[in-house]
Length: 240
Image (tube, rainbow, N blue to C red):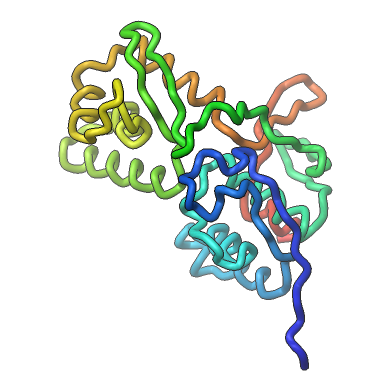
């Protein structure tokens, strides 16, 4: 039998690829995905992958044909890929339960959040002036790889220093790439630990949350309450 060429679709990233370095495979702002097959359904039911918590990562690797490391994606862009994978695999209708109520929605109506494409520079970094100290900084949008490193570092801090703190400063150490044009990591670390004012830290974190590219996963119930659309294993296999 001749090799079958699977149909593919292009999925646009909420970031337009602008948050990645110039030579990054995702810089084009689009990802080619193949349609889900029974082989990918085998991945979804692999108990070993489920127990390790990497089943969705393996699914995306298969659907994007391993053209890049999915851990190098931002959370927002990854959400867009998840959405594309679900629609290509099982259609746009999605049912989920919330507080005992069955919700039925059309995933094709979900749009990316507005993203100002003029914000990232050629390296994918974004400028911000700290409102209190008036210092200029540059920061990057974190990837899954960054998030994993942050999680492990916080876990180590908790284990060896006997506390569960450090999340704010640890996250900022990975996110801030320069302070007043100084990109020395040790000096950035010292600034965050000793000189970053609480007002500036809060303003920066709020700004990052506001401008980070993502898909709009907000859903308003009939009661008027707004919730976030859940993305779990059942998201990819409605009958699982």
